[in-house]
Image (cartoon, rainbow, N blue to C red; front, top):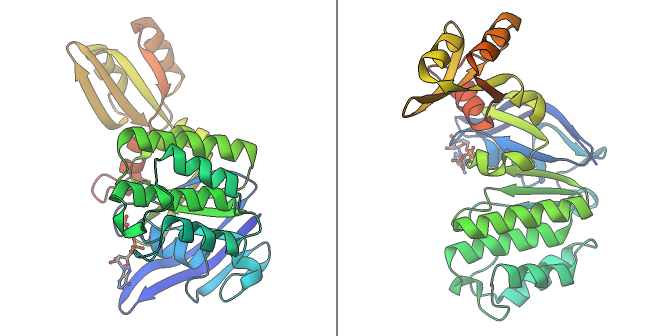
Length: 291
Ligand SMILES: Nc1ncnc2c1ncn2[C@@H]1O[C@H](COP(=O)(O)OP(=O)(O)OP(=O)(O)O)[C@@H](O)[C@H]1O
């Protein structure tokens, strides 16, 4: 599956939600689409799913997506508003409808997920709790097994154990059935270990597309005795700091240099990769951003 986006712009009247964005997604990976509120994630995903006529080009395996059933049959977008269904429809009908759309639908897996998320099969969608409705969206997204599956903050309203059950299910199913998955979230650290590639969008513009591992190694987490950590970070870009008693941990951005690494060893400081969340805040912070 190859997703090509060239010069994509999405406007609502005077508001430019997506501003001349170009990128390619290749291979079967879990991509994180990160951005602050209103940065254009939902608008971008809607255009990728063919929900709106794009200014610019959006193709999936060479096929334009807008009004093209041959392309959209291979795409599933689950939006963050739990609107997967008419509220009067029973869960069983919602699933039957989703199944009718896709050859790749796996009904047995959908039933397993319903059990996992404790969603009653015969209940009307409108009678489900917020978290259960979100989970129903996730069931549809995963059981569709669509070659391009997009989950737009579909974990909203789920409690913590349910979210972790979702992440486990997502990873297990991705391993068994690799496909292109794009997932938007504000809970970056919860999902970070699942992400292979990260796209960051800010004010409608793509500010970064990078392998998650490369991104993590673009900064360093340093932990140790507070004055030693301060000595290490002096003159570097510090993204965040945490203190616990006399121990301090700091995230720094950018290369640290050989000399400092030697000094870190002398001081007994612990070094590790930077947290994606801190990098994200840094790259999208209008005041401190230094991308
Ligand atoms: N239907 C609409 N009509 C007018 N403006 C809209 C509409 N949908 C989105 N916008 C505007 O487009 C911009 C991008 O919105 P979008 O929902 O794509 O962002 P987002 O990154 O998904 O946000 P969030 O993280 O808050 O869900 C925002 O300024 C928003 O107000």
